[in-house]
Length: 365
Image (cartoon, rainbow, N blue to C red; front, side):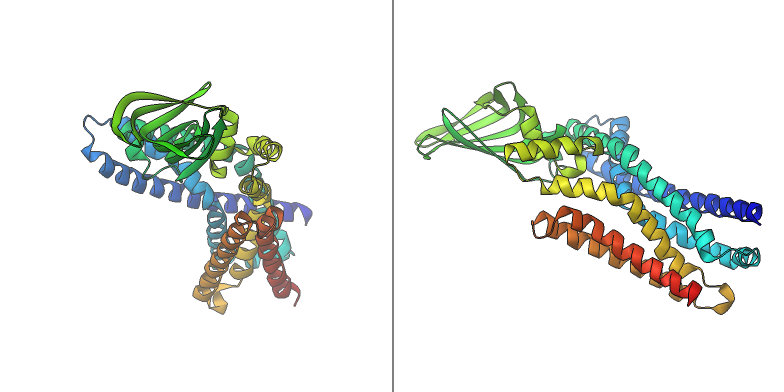
């Protein structure tokens, strides 16, 4: 019996893995196609555009998009897998072999957990790096100022002080995690806090000891504006400090998040976003396992009992409500109204507990 149960468990686990991969790569291909078409439309007005560069810009952005919808891939894959088992009466065979629902759900839970570990430790760092490369390609393709419309998650604000006074920097978008800025506006103040000048620039790059502003226009009181091909603004900021201030948590690889959090604590900066992202990535394997329990709770009913459409809708609805809960807790954490640990792990406990109780009720009454 143990041999038969082991073979059936491996069979169920392999079928679940194949279903999830089919859903994931199907969505990946669809997102890639849609994004490439949109990128091609935007690049139609760019002279001498390179088709390879357009494809790379689009392709490198897709992994981070699909990373966000991975829980839904697990949910849909698990539901389709178990509904197919039920339709082909394979669940009846498993029951006849003496297996309980827990025995043929546990392989999927384990595989989902391992997928979550891989997504956190390998896929996330790769998608973060590719996202930054995509921003660089987009800036090269459209020009830094035009590319700021889509990428960057801006606007970004940065303040610095030195012996000349204070400078407040605003940028529409950032590349290389804040070291390179696009659509830059700088307001400079003297030591007394009085306005000195406003500088508008197409782009800015942080160099040792100064910001290099490209194609700058300088506005000063009682002086006509002057255009400069290059303007250097003194700064004491380092690339590490700028990355900590301007890098969005989603663009920081998992293995670098502890360093960013440590730097923020040392510098007295707010690190709630980085803490939340780190906890979300730690909770991801458990969250994917919870999605399997939710899917199993609505998909193990035999086809001959009817109500399949209602089961599918209830599973999709449960996943959607869990997604809303996750977004609400994230917003509360970013507003510093909820601890990042609670915000990241609460959806995991709610989803896992809901699926566990539903399965427990169906199996044991």
